[in-house]
Length: 401
Image (cartoon, rainbow, N blue to C red; front, side, top):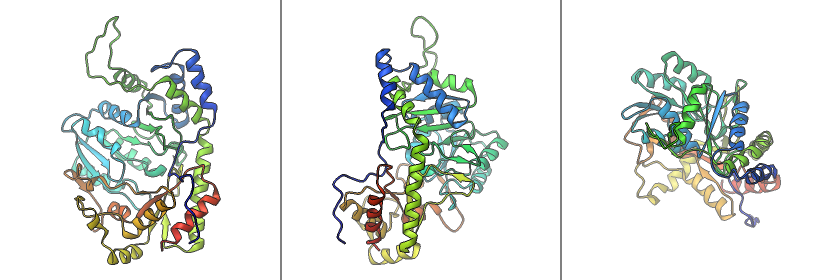
């Protein structure tokens, strides 16, 4: 294949700045509001909450901080049972462990790669005393949040929606982040918009958000001196960071449009070439933000590759015995040789050495998440990638089959 490695790396998803961010940053400098709190923080909370359709927002240092406060506000304490999505980044579930909770992981459905509502019902039948349910919108694809919202409300169990990857996505006309009792956003550097870091907790309940802001500011009581009656955290977002976020939010629709263009082009070209793979799916009633485009290599191709090469032997410290297929790792290695970034699908939590002690509720006869992890791969979805560069990436992937 006569293709030279890219001089500049093709990233999975890197920040795209536009210039308006500097207006808000400069304003913070001019007013000397560079520390936490200030006009940018106040406005960013209102603008993000308004966009998602949530009533109120608390701008925080990270999405993880937002999740931690959500667990506390939901009443999760030591020994509490929390039902979590199994296929996600560890940040979704780590804060529940901060609270010494007992986790129950739930397998995904194939239609969205997100928590299966039917298995959620099974989990709640086994654990009716659960304190919270935490689905995630994987790679910007909405879970069946409306169904899970109904399930949780009928049982009086808080629903915490991890929308760290799905700002700008919607389900049946409702924006991700506004389902359930709490919504979580992330503005990490690789997300659809970034503030360089940071996150937000969303809720329709103003009192809940006021409490979150209080806890995030070291739980300092309204006294002239430092008075503390409960545990607090240093979780508030800086006014500078919020200014970046405000400038980025102006371009969210543009970013979503470009992400979708990338997804559609992958799908069209892979179909034209006839490669034995499919794209990461979404429900017909969903409108993803297409944050990351992913592929799932056909099972027979993976089986054939793994019969020839047992790659698991290359990872002697791996406890689960399950790793990406040889063909998936070959695609990753080849892309890397051409200076292109890719990433395996999130390894399911129940396979993680730290988390495999917790209960896992899977489909009877198969484990969907293990199969997706084995056959899946996230492709470069950077909106600065040109169509010509994307075509080259596609040609490199095609050469691996």
